[in-house]
Amino acid sequence: MLSTEREQDPGDGFAAIARDLQNQTSQIATLDRIGLLAQDTIQGCDHAGITLLDRRGRITTVGATDEVVGAADVRQYELGQGPLVDVLEQQNAVVSPDLANDRRWPKWGSWVDDKLGVKSLLCFQLFTTARSYGALNMYSDRLDGFDLHDRTAGPALAAHAAVAMATSDESEHLNIAVVNRTIVGQAEGILMERYNLDADQAFAMLVRVSQNENRRITIVSQELIETRRTPGGKPRT
Image (cartoon, rainbow, N blue to C red):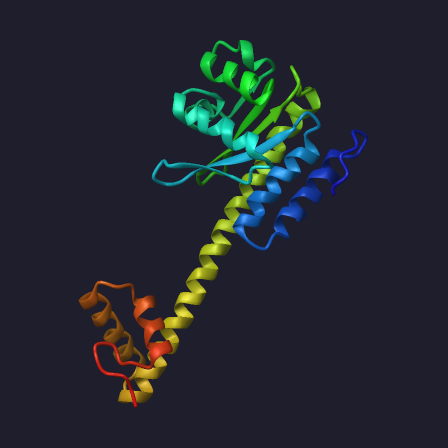
């Protein structure tokens, strides 16, 4: 666990957070770690999670530290009101010291106070210069649970989280691309050896089968590797 003592140099603390997030092995692990770091870093935070916004505008709650986060988020979707809705649509940050009496979201605020025992919150948009990824939501079980330190550290944590998400997203897509290219390359090799084709001819053959059967070229290639069956032909004996 990272040290979160108030006398710690903030620069050292966030440098450690950056290294921690960089060491995560997958996008899912990164998302889960961000929620836990929010609890460690933001003293008033009792519950934390991330709401992802995909390129089609669909939202999903991930990396939640407990069921309170998911329940609070779902209720916002149902009512069409809440800090998350505001942050994703128009604001970089939202603070509420007293949810039960916050006039911005009267139905949602009173509901989370009554049903979940959540009294206050911090919510930050997760964005880079390239795109917005969603929001980091932090809930407190105490009225005015987030002090000045928390409100100052929150944007920095959100910025580190957004950069880590961008990096893991790019890395994951790169890994998928490398794996897919390896699969297609192996299939090309089988066809080249079997039919004395060059690489371009083998790839063109895979493309034709993919188009004719309306299946992705990686699926056609994987099937060839596993079954040794020539695309559109009979099993090799």
